[in-house]
Image (cartoon, rainbow, N blue to C red; front, side, top):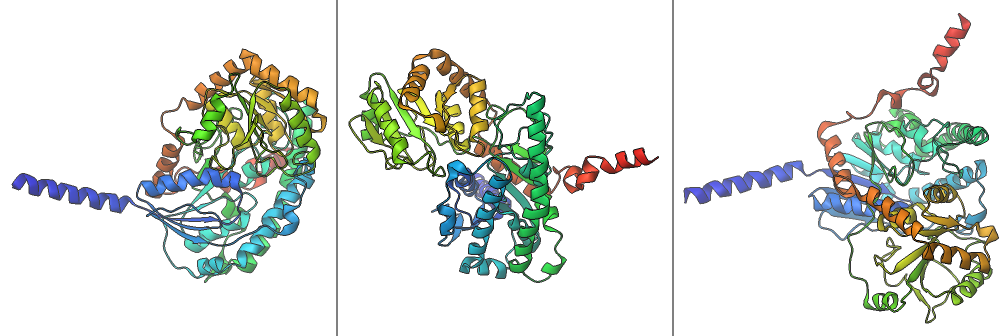
Length: 486
């Protein structure tokens, strides 16, 4: 009897301890960008599984889950943004401003929702605020309203703008701008081009983008004492923890401050049985299958046109492989070609099956994560933004070949697929990268949850002083000027 009573007391104490450790977390994620969503979704569910309560303001669902309270709202990007030719957006200032305009217009739409008004009226206390500030920099103002630990999720850390705004060192001598197809070992002209892009990006960000975002934050994000809010750029850099969808196998080895942690691979789900019709289709092709996906964001004349898909169909007809595809507008199903969209969840691109021989991809970051995790060689057709840089990395490590979309022909596609599928050196290199990528002490979700709990317990102890320094202080420009003057 006494033993049973003691066990009950211990159980009650343990249960109380679990409840004490449970945190109240606020997630604000208004922009419906699925590439960002697929990083957030498993993280939020992992936090909820650990007993933390998450309150979500988003246009995309994170539940159902007992520990997730959702404030969902209907949200569409302005019509003009949905009509952009993403394959012809450029690589410099034009691209930067186009992407910023998407964030700016989406912010104005978010401010009109009932859920945003509820958020502004909320007086609830939270232990942490989670946001994705890329092209949503105005969200940093919310950390002042709720006076809580701020945690940032980054879909990658290859942009000089992202690094500048988050206190991450970015040396253009070896740190490549996300918009350029270079490696970390650049020759002089590449370093010159890279440095020019970095400086222009910094200038445009500081003197145009941040000012526009600060203006709308001051106009709409108002609450008692908002007038005493620090400048937006200071709030943006005031992150206790930054979780990056990155890894040295995917990018290059770069120095990172202690408040920045890589969690690439968090979107990979444990292997699950494939639907029977997809399993049967894959196994019915003795030579294997090709998986084709150009991502949900790639739209435009070089990607989803009838001309491009005619090239794809004519090339596939002369190959000995089956084809599984998703996110390709004009392709249709045949005995050789099957659609994946209706059978796999959106954040699964490559079926986990040994008979998948080649991944034909645009080189989007989530696609690179999957092909690296599963060890599948690639044929790359990069269109815009980071895709050419990602492709250059994979070519450098010899896991595939590249075809420029503007030069895509039936003959070049047949050659590329046969070259990668028949040559074992590509598969061997892909498997080696997969082993390096998977070799870690804990899963990405476990690591992300651990560091979130760490900063909730201990506060803002990981962030270096560099995040609070001005640009001229960080680069010692004031010291250099003083030295020259004396």
